[in-house]
Image (cartoon, rainbow, N blue to C red; front, side, top):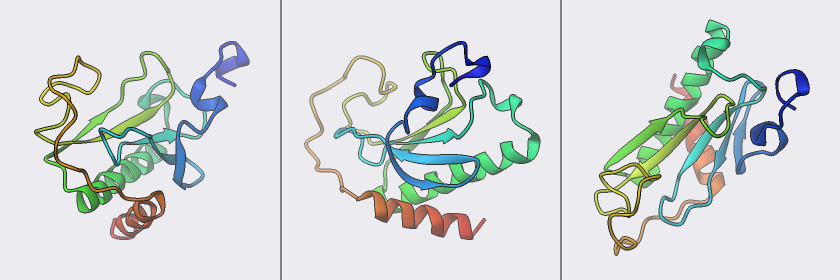
Amino acid sequence: MSEGGLEKCELCDSPGGEIIWENGICRVVMVADADYPGFCRVILNRHLREMTDLPHKERMQLMTVVFAVESAMRRLYQPDKVNLASLGNMTPHVHWHLIPRWQDDRHFPQPIWAPTQRARAATQRQQVNARQLGDQIIAALRTT
């Protein structure tokens, strides 16, 4: 339930994807998107609207997880770029989108929410299971 129990929150009421790693502050979920394998979200485990609503220590811990996911994603998928986005216009709950991008993906160079630029990429992207990505996230967290 969201702040004061007045509004429904999708990220409070559901995991938001397949959970691949979790601690007391946040969870990392894999988003099922065939065009963007490795697309993840880092979701705060309690309802807050903005990063600055978090105490400084938790803000830094959350960002450590975001950076660990990015590192794991780069190692496993070798994208041309990783997009980090904290939007939340439709779901006002602290969460980060981590989206691997390739120059031949359907939306490049536009955001993935923009109209498509081309048909599905001809290049087959590496498929990595949730456990492999979770193991890489744990490895990246150990080095921070």
